[in-house]
Image (cartoon, rainbow, N blue to C red; front, side, top):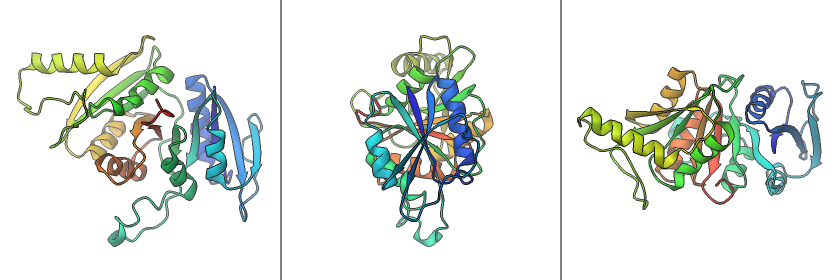
Length: 270
């Protein structure tokens, strides 16, 4: 099982390489570096890649990476986020256009799970705690399945975060939190137990904790990860920035304090 680390510039992607190497170690994956040399692009420098296999290819980066994603043993592709300055007055118009062309194209394609690292994020040095936001819908639970399959292990904690908002998912089989927040404690305990049973299947002894917050999802997710010292946020992704869920993902690409593992909701991520 392989984690491909897409490196365009070893200096610019140094934090990406470090976090990806440590995630691969935590999951038992084999890290490999892929450098797709685009026209006008830079050659690889002398970063700490000596012990990593490097695949050197020519072509358009996103298309080449999408082709590599078809490999059966590929678990994820690590890509750096490269934010560019944006006029705040044009935020909506440019919402999906400032994270680097490779990351944007890979998100749009849904070709593979993506580890996304933004410069200045808290680096992933070990994996002891991860946050998995769940709205309570079956399609979004692909993130929980991937987290359990890859990372559930004794000594780790998976925080299942449910953010209560003014809306509830309409998907059949959804199980959001009760909207009345002053219910008796035993009713909340019963809901948390049922929520965990529905969406978490870890057999490896890792600890699971359900956290319920009220408010704006992206803000609550970032605050939970920051307060808990989480090393990773695992999110489902429906392929579009246009709807409410897409807006949450877009904001977290800018504000998350730690790396993000984005799991497509289609068959590629399930």
